[in-house]
Amino acid sequence: MAGVLSKAYFHDEAAAYAKLESIIWPEGPVCPHCGSMGRVYSMTANADKRIRVGLKKCGDCRKQFTVKVGTVFEASNVKLNLWFQAAYLMASSKKGISAHQLHRTLGVTYKTAWFMAHRIREAMKTMGLEPMGGEGETVEVDETFIGRKKGAPKKRAYHHKMKVLTLVDRRGEARSVVVNDLKPKTIVPILKANIAKETRVMTDEAGHYYHLLKDFAEHHFVRHSQDEYVLPGGIHTNTIEGYFSIFKRGMKGVYQHCSEKHLHRYLAEFDFRYNARESLGVNDGQRAEQALAGIVGKRLMYLDSRRASV
Ligand SMILES: [Zn+2]
Image 1 (tube, rainbow, N blue to C red):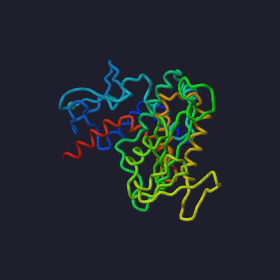
Image 2 (image 1 turned 90 degrees about the horizontal axis):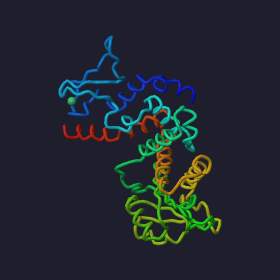
Image 3 (image 1 turned 120 degrees about the vertical axis):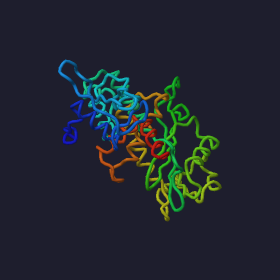
Image 4 (image 1 turned 135 degrees about the vertical axis):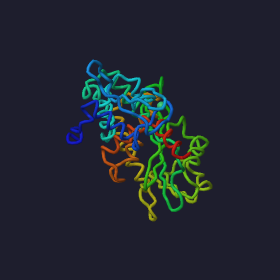
């Protein structure tokens, strides 16, 4: 980690601007006011006046801007290089990183660290999701319980706990949602909306999964109550259990006091890291860049729609 964190854009604001510009504007700066490309100039400082780092001027509409315009970075007083550090730390720590640790590492206030962490989690949310799985593909589905619902008594009863439903494509991504209950009428529509019909679905023997066969090409389940873990034909839910074990260790070790209101953000963070994991060929640095690109996702979508209309 030390090796990667020695890069200039983690420590130098101008270098961080240049890095963000290369992520956001791979084909050169785009004016956020009029959409002009190719007629954007960098402002250079003259002797008597300091020019803001990264300041640009559009030759078409004459307006000034930086790469931060319209993004969460614009409203934040935190230097861009610290945002890079935060994104890197969150993207590379398997179990996550607490706001306290960010606060100490970055030298920002706890409140600021908390704000940054949540913004980065928002950025990690995936958008425009296609159905998972498909013909010959396998998706494992399972639920887990975490923490305690607001105002619930300190009992161990599961209905007082927050519930998470996760879907893991064996060859790819994970998708997690917070659910109010585990009734089939809650669970099944989520599965149908997120998993392609042609998929082989694997679950355990829980009752809310009983009738999935009519919705998917195959539905297999293992009976953990009978010590069934792996059945012939690749029937198991080990992939999703691996996912949950990382999630639970992270939530226990780092995010003990997560409220129901924020749980979906933590899930987005764990899904994000899983979906950009090492074994899929994504390294820590690339993962951090993806997170930062997500922060300015609106800008990226704007660029994409521009390209699509050309
Ligand atoms: Zn312009």
